[in-house]
Image (cartoon, rainbow, N blue to C red; front, side, top):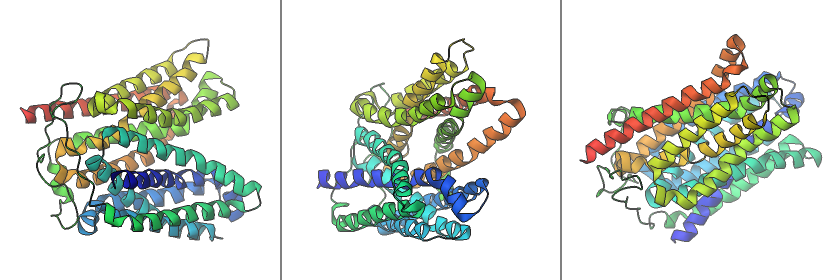
Length: 408
């Protein structure tokens, strides 16, 4: 049962990554087909982001009432329906309409699945699962390319991914009896750095169907929650800013050939995917806190390499790869450490808020950097990333000290 459900969850993470790159890959064709300005893509992404934030915040209440398995299945069904709606949209307003259930479904399933894996599976699986999300996100541009070149059009790509999501929905519904039969992982007494496990609910039952609701206000008052939200916001902000602006920085500030810059921009994403796969082999031995600490330090090193005013561009290009590899374990480790840091009872509520902070960072940081770079110049990209690295590292280290004091 453990392995069967884990296999389904792995497939779920691949499938969840599939829709995330479709809009960006297809928008040049979609924009012409729908006869709207290029910038209108931002409207769709903002609607999706708003839905993900709202459903992430509501995920704790939903999961306690209906269980993680049913919430996941229904959420994937919502995204499948939205993708079918996208494929049938002939007007821009229709995309905006279907973006609502898309965002609501994506946020709920993200929070529910992440919390379930944090409670029931080892740290290595959290890293590998997020690596598989990257596989899905990397595949979808090829699906869009195939659909366009084969005559199916951009709508055909959404239809293909919608069918995949519908099949996954059926598999999740069939697997519902398994979700309550996987034992909760018992946190170790100490991680590899010697940090004491301070789970305040170590002997308690995790949040689940029928248990008491933890309100947003209650969760925010738990010591250390604001710190981890700031760290998570900082990480997702630096990741999304790097993905959007790194290639432009290399071209405009370091005179890198556009094709080379685009290739290394994709290597940042591939670095995240490969890094999470590799981190899975050492996650249980190293521990979440060391992975977060080392990840932020590596991203900082990569940003410094980007900034060095050298005659060669090799160091800057290598810095982007280093930053991608460093980014890899931070997100999974923050999520996986939540039950240990804040208790199993509170983990679903806090992970839901963390997802909201993640989406906020991913949505707000790139346009903020765009505004700053228009005023000061693109040269500030490494500095912008270093400020976010410092924020994430300081907040996460303050949380570590708080948890250690609580355990004494």
